[in-house]
Image (cartoon, rainbow, N blue to C red; front, side):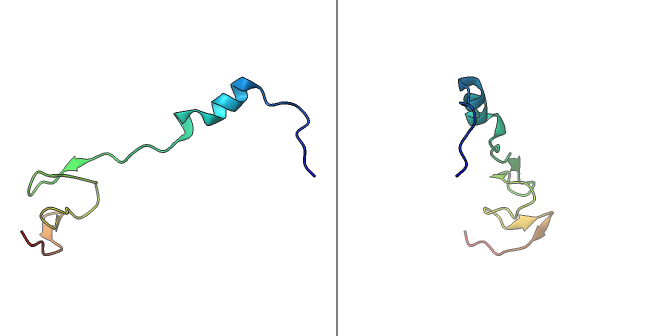
Length: 60
């Protein structure tokens, strides 16, 4: 059975648990059609447009 040879120091343990390695939340951009905040490279959920073309029909 694998057993650690030495005790992991507090600094090494805390360095591993720090938030430096965690993923960041996605940034938001404004939709050029309606001005709502949306995730980049995705269809706008408010108006249904992507790159100036209506992709989905959104009922208002």
